[in-house]
Length: 321
Ligand code: G3H
Ligand code: 13P
Ligand code: ZN
Image 1 (cartoon, protein in one colour):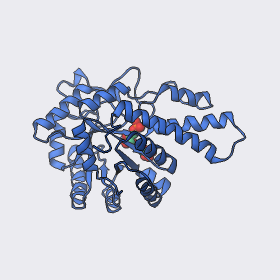
Image 2 (cartoon, helix red, strand yellow):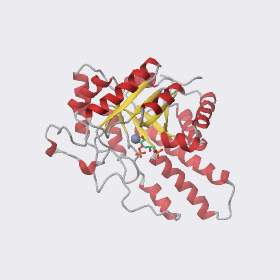
Image 3 (cartoon, rainbow, N blue to C red):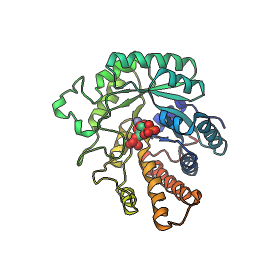
Image 4 (spheres, rainbow, N blue to C red):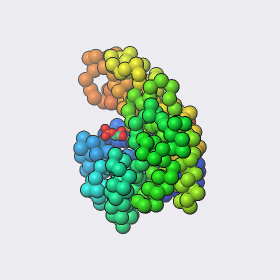
């Protein structure tokens, strides 16, 4: 079974009102864990590869591992470049057969962001690839403009609904990563901060009102940083700070119901692997066969992915819709 196109996965997810898990991969155990969970749960999936993952594992290794995953499974699998930072990197991935690429020029002023995205879109669309752009800054919820932002101040960190429409129209991007209080990593918030779901609703509505249809939105930084996994890491010798914080799963679910179609998860996979490896190292310090700790790490990651598919993304059972 070949790769399934990102465009088809999006269309089905929008219709079925579930979110696609977009999981970052950079080694064999991660790919196996994700694909085994998705296969067992009958969930479509996006495997995403960052520039750093390509540097770590080499693009050819990743390509061959994904080819193996595709040939050994029956579920739809798309392959996506995560946070592409240049036209050249996006072009390489498009030429290698990725079904979608992200061009992240969100740190640039609006017009420059548009110009960079436009160039990638032009190349991608000629080569049967779709593009994710990003508007807004993933700075975390401590920058929530809330009421003070009034009708969402232009020039703030969060994505502005009117600008989102303008951006999609001007760039032609096929999906849009938005900033609504989400951020990367294991230390996302201070205290009990939440995603700005009202703003998400307004972005979705603005796109709909502008005749852009049920437009696919993407939530980066969507790990929930489960406290029990952080505790496990620290129990077995880790030193993660007391201020770890992730997005509440209830917020992800609400974001899904409100119109987020792709949910990016990396940190939670890293945490699950680390906790399992630390446990083996602590309980069996004489062990030195990598299979004896990478195996449990793979199982722990698989169970974490299964939980997301079933209980958060609701993509379980939708592989063959
Ligand atoms: O958002 C970034 C992803 O978690 C990828 O991280 O650049 O360390 O591979 P990375
Ligand atoms: P997390 O750090 O929350 O897992 O986000 C990952 C991500 O957005 C990858 O693009
Ligand atoms: Zn991201």
